[in-house]
Length: 572
Image (cartoon, rainbow, N blue to C red; front, side, top):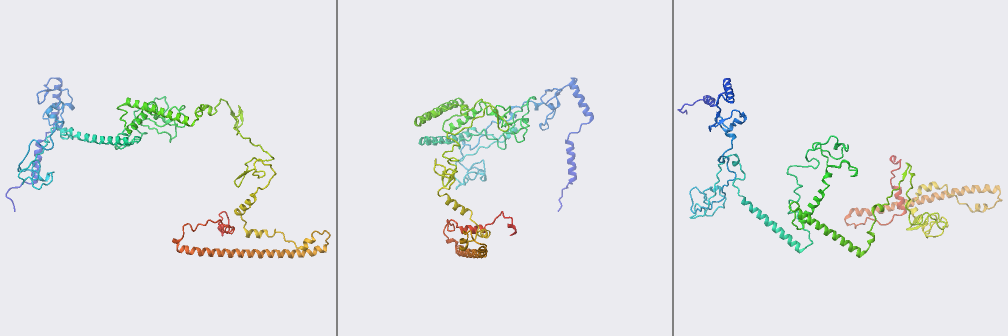
């Protein structure tokens, strides 16, 4: 369906809008207009033309610069003016300290429901959906009589920028009094608890670390900043050109840090040098000299005193703190001296307290001694060596060693004769009682012989047993050559027989050892099998054998043990 009214096209509407904007916009000045304005300005400065007048009829000085006389674009001035440079009136400035009432308006009581009021409580200043009171059983709309107060409505008509954005607008400082009273109540309760604890136990130390939040407030950095003591910005200090630069004191890159921006070096560049020889000990040296240490001790004393219940502060009451500190130090010294005298009176030993000075204790003298590279004395007398009160290198009773040069079985003796009797006469080298048996037992246990290898190589060295015929013929010196020839074949036969016997004995011993080894293996296997099957029933420490190993076990271990130093081990 088409409507009867004529519709204008969109292009025509846009064109007409552009024409209206062009009429409203100020026209661009031509060259002629600029020239006329310049001539008028020069004539006003020369005094031939009248000065410009503002909206109040005041003349504007033509010599005022443009950046002062021209009003900003947002001021909305119609002609030449200097109003934006003059102080504003009080009514235009706004009132930051004006307070609008808040809360309920108690000056007026409403007893009947009004049209458009809240259906729940009956207040006109809000609706039911904005009501903050609890939902009532009988709403104000249907109740016969109500008692309600309206809220104060704040007028938000701000005059200027600051008044509109004032965050503390309509704030009553009296409300802060409630917070102060609550804090004072908590502090009073803490004091009462502390007094009760001290009353019950006078020696108890009460720490105030939880309550005293401002104790270390000076050491805390601002939130969001990370400050390093080596990189903290200080006042710029200019160096005199003749002085040595701080970074040239020690060229080691791992030495004290030098901040080129502030030209500061806080640490000591040469900590190995003594304080007397050091020309520059770092900028922190000044911080720990003079009254800074006394200030730090005073602050520490104030904290400790406050923890013990004494109300004192370093900055608020410095005189009181200093007097308290002096009194405390005097009492401390008196207590120390009294305890010292009491101990000396009870146990004695006052003569040990009267010690000579350290220079005498360390035996320091002014004697000059010069040594060569080899250690010989060139000048002066060498310092005598400290000797003991006992005689040294004195041999008595024919001994060639001193008493205590020999030790065996928990006893001391002489090494020359192995005698355990002091001041005895030396009779030469001999074995003491019990020494030979012990020595043999230790040698047999520590280094047992390997039987198989030693027997094979030592068999030829064993001398053969000589028969009775040979023993009888040996003493006779008048034996003839014929008898000697008869003895030779007998000797050969006896040697062969002895070799055979020894071989048989070795074979028997080896068989016995093999059989014993097999039996022991079978026994150990039989023992291990039930233990593996039911290990839970095994007694505690049952696998631990306290018995000493026998010679056979040691020999078997020596045969089986791997030898890492054997060069042929890798070819086996």
